[in-house]
Length: 360
Image (cartoon, rainbow, N blue to C red; front, side, top):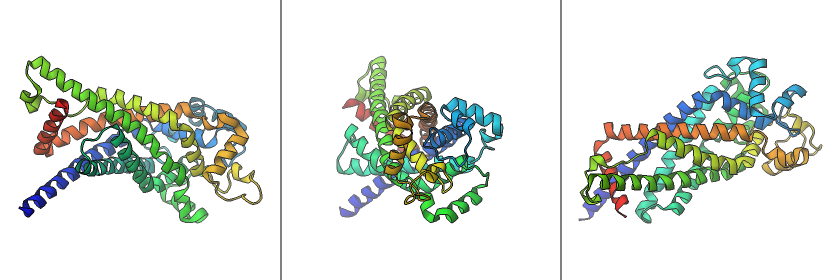
C-alpha cells in the first residue's frame, strides 16, 4: 500500500536525522574538549602563520617578534615572556570564546552535513565506498566552510590584533573597517581546503570500516560461530578511544601536511588589516585593499620564496593532528554512549548493520 511505503520512508528519514544529530553533537563536544586542551598551540600557530617571514600581516615593525615567529615553539615562548600566560591559556587567552564557538559549529555542521549526504547517497546509490566518502566529505566540507567562515575570521582577528579588544568590539571594528566582507576574507582558499576534510575522512572512514569488519570477524572466530549466528550485543559498532585517537592522528597528519601551503595563505588572507605591513608595501593601485588568494600567494613567493608557504607547518600539523585525535576519540565514545542510552532501538540497528557489513 502507498501509505505504508510513505511511512517507511518517513521513519528512515527520522532515523538518518537522529543519527546525524547525535554524531554531530559528539563531534561538536569533542571539538570543545580538544580546543580547550590545545589552545596555547592554537593561538601560537595562528600568530606564526600570520606574522612569519618578510610577507607578514603584522602591523608593527618589531624585529625580535618577527624572528621569534619563524618557529612555533619560539613564538610560544616569546608570547609567554612578553604577554604572560593569560595570552595563551584558556579561558583567558584572546579569542577563546569565538574559537570554541567556531570549533563547535565547525564540527557539528560538518558531521551533520556528512551524515545527511551519506543517508541520501545510501538511499540512491547503496553502500558507501572510498569514492563515495570522498564525495561526501568534499560536499560536507564546503557547506561547513561557508557556514563557519565569519567565526573563523573573527577568531583569527582576536588572536592576531595588536590592540586588545573584546569579542563584540572586535566584530564591530572589523565591520567598520571593511564591512561584511571582513567576515568573508579567505573564502576561496577556505572552499579549496574542503580537500583537507576529503583526505582525512577518506582515510579515517576507510580504515575504520575495514578495522571494525576485522574485529567482528575475529570475535565470531573466537566464539566459534558464524557471523550470521553472532549475538548483536557482541558486535562492535564504534572504535575504542585509543583506536579513534591514533587513527584520527594519522589521517589528520597526512591531510594537514598536504594542505598546509593553502592553510597558511588562508590564514594570512584572514589576518590582514589596512595597517598590515604587507599592504603598506603594496603598489599604489592595491595599497590598502585586501589581497586576494592569488595576490597573497605571489607576495609570499616574492618575499620569502618556497619557505614562505611552510612557515609554521610544525605547529599546524602538531596542533591539527592532536586536536583531530582527541576530537575523534571523544566523538566515537560520546556518540556510542548517546545511542546506547537514548536511542537503544537505533543502536540495535547499527549493530545489525555492522554485522551485515562484516558478512560482505
